Length: 386
Image (cartoon, rainbow, N blue to C red; front, top):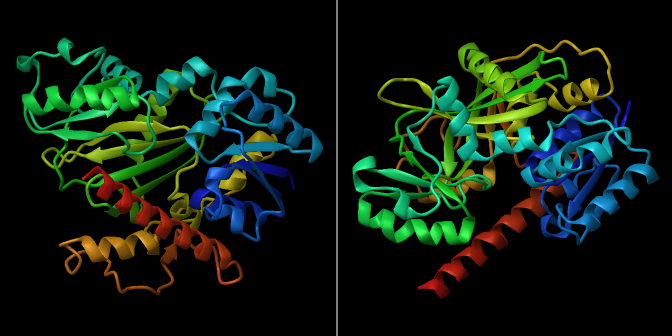
């Protein structure tokens, strides 16, 4: 049993909190006030909730984090968001000896988390990835003869699909690149992989000796919005080949701890292409947990030097985000053709990302209300833009 502090909320925090409680760990939660009512902070599986106004990369947040660790005798630290993972990596030396965690040094962290740098690693070692033009300081660095369309403009560092913009010709590229760069910072250009292939998310955990402790693979069926949105229906699958490729990549980078990869299948070749590495627990982690891998305990056992428990991974466990799936159903022209059906609400292999269990209803209620408010605010913002 350990006192575990998870940093950040979301549905991943909700799933990890419950998975830790299965083995009688005490779960503490530290999060920024902008994440208020974001699933995990409403859960009964969290023993103590600590909210702060400080942003995760600020000095004040780190000072408060150290206070929390010492005051509540925290044994282990697990980030639920990219920015919290970056904060831990930045302060790795200061946190060593104060609390148990596994995170690479900041130079290794940036080499993996920066999408531009990750693509350079893929180019260097010939790992499967989409054609990418790196080292772009301005659009003047790219001539029309270098590129073929459609192309994606991708910020080097961003969470999810934020800032990613599809362009269909050179004039669109000239018009949109400076705007995206001004808002999100340095960008690179990447071949657009046409729709029709699978989107596959892969989780791996590597210990300090470079050993692969565990892995899981999740295939995404549906997402909202349909073009570049968040996953709202996913299923557990087996794919040893992609796990082996990504494990080899992580060893080349020098990664340690938990890593989550986004890959996409090229429908023309059937090959899974590496898109990005997320240095934290993903929102769809409950798919893997329901498939038999208790990721919360896997992580904490390695942190604490405990023997790894035996887990049996099962294919075919379906995870739905009911809120996003409802929006998908209302908007998608494919609503009647996709399987599993939107109306397949019950079944022993069907689970819900935005719910905990019947004894823990508040995360779904508060999280859904929060998402409704965000959708309304987004629509109002779009009206103002017009």
